[in-house]
Image (cartoon, rainbow, N blue to C red; front, side, top):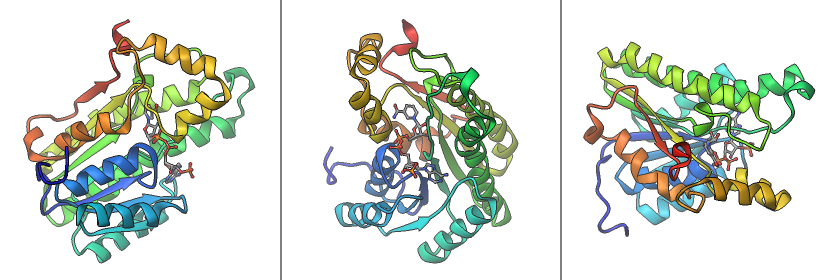
Length: 261
Ligand code: NDP
């Protein structure tokens, strides 16, 4: 869809996308901007300012990039404060795409390995969602939060050993439901998207180092291909918008049919 036929369901909104510097988050940030939102790209990577600049240029939206480690409570607080100051309004659309994967046999994994994955994927989602909700509740505004979970929160997908990742994503799904119930009385909807395999820098590392594993992912996906971040973008924009007004605590699978097999 080109920019001229794009729905503008997010006009007047202020969106933030964690992990928005590249991969899924960058494409989601682009879509939110194309649908009319001002967008802040929150990430640790050095490409984030360039991603925000490109999105602004391509969509005409006001964008900014703020360096943010989602595991650092004080840093998260400061980052969202900076976004509000730069964009002029509190964030009322949040997409939490920051995440890491670490494949290691569970019996070989250290506590630090395990904690790091849970810290980024689960605690980081909590800290950002809570920061955004706190400000919305304080200023009596509605909002929408979309968490990026994973089909790995539903199944133990194989062949890669990723107990921490699977556990963290199952946690994100339950966190999403818990927050949805707590905050719906304040007009804040929280929903999750659980993608199947998506072609990004995260999965490219595997396709390059272990083509057989990558081929297995494709073979196990009934649609016959891995997804792209663009496959997720319309869904996330919909969930963020008022069109999804009756969706509260939903977890939408976007996996090319993987969980059917
Ligand atoms: P990428 O690795 O391409 O992008 C993730 C981004 O998040 C990176 O820029 C990464 O930076 C950033 N990030 C990592 N840790 C932090 C942190 N502590 N604070 C802020 N930013 C951080 O991954 P994807 O785009 O593939 O994944 C996006 C989300 O989608 C993740 O939550 C992932 O688990 C989920 N997902 C991905 C699937 C896939 O197949 N790709 C499938 C299902 C879910 P850095 O380089 O520093 O790590």
